[in-house]
Image (cartoon, rainbow over all chains, first blue to last red; front, side, top):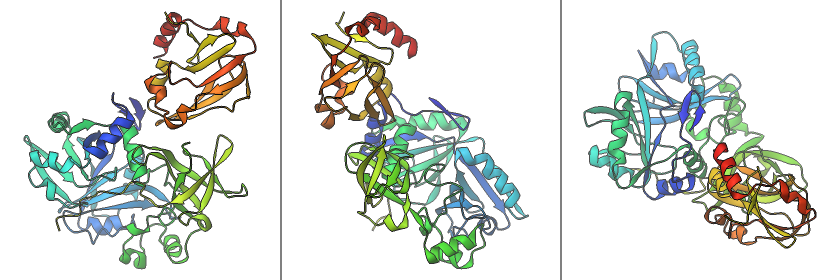
Length: 349
Length: 125
């Protein structure tokens, strides 16, 4: 257990990070992500209100659907990334633990009048992730298996009312399940009783999301990186690109039109040596062209994987680069992400 | 009781003549978790006691392995290149790191025997 943002967090359970990672890709794992902030946003028009703080198309979010977006600052930097779900009569936000207090202050200061928000302090959050997740959850919550990726639905298991979304942070099919904290251990144990399900810790969560090419706030994205540089332009809807109306819109719109001087890319080291966060990326002449923001061993990829920012001139796939690990330049190349194909459930054909 | 000697940095040494085989302890591999990469020194390199000799990387992090004795690297365990997990499976056997030709045998005197090391490791856990 390690302390993180005021929580005691499990980095790994007894099987170890590698076994937990592999189990998630093969069957299903439960991650306790209760440190994440859960917020309900209500009011006359919470979508319009939230759109003043994020570039995502929230007004266009149908009931029971969710979307990835970010709080931006006046220079287009990312204050936090978050998931927004249209629950029907309110918006449900999931934000990062380390940013929770700042996000709440930001919402309080930035939201127009007529909008209220509740921090759902009495709810826990678990993620059930992996190819077996749908069958496992459907045994207790019939119908959960046909929810499309990025949709939300309420379910009841053993008398506990759960807010379930088909989403996650592993690249696998799966769910995030918001549970009244009083029931969290009981519901987790019910799901864990399935032969296919094991617990997994933060270590496996990190290697899984890295292979899936997903950003970790504070590492791959932060106040100094814009959504465009981070390769997250896809999360900014057409109407928002044209209309702006969010912090830093001018800079972000200009970057979408003109490009950026650096880009977040995937990087595959040639050998077996992992290139970890902070590793300098150089060109053939030793000139620094970027830095690794997340890197390690990808158990499913079968070798080291990394992501980071490089000068846009070097951001094309297959561009050879050097990774300076322990003062020694080691060859690698720019690579497409995800490193392991996503297996999200897009609905029945 | 084994014939191994241990350092406070969790390396072990097995002496045969003037050649010291070096690896990391069972306790160390347990603390590291799954080993995914080992960087070994070049054969012929001179190492000094408590200086950097190798690097072991687990899923979690990269850690230095220090030379428990001074001398010349005469052999390294090439098997670790393809099978770094040997360090977890057999830390004091097939998972050895390197062989050092001792330049000062008296350096071994300050090292712990297995019983003393186990007590020391227990106090670190």
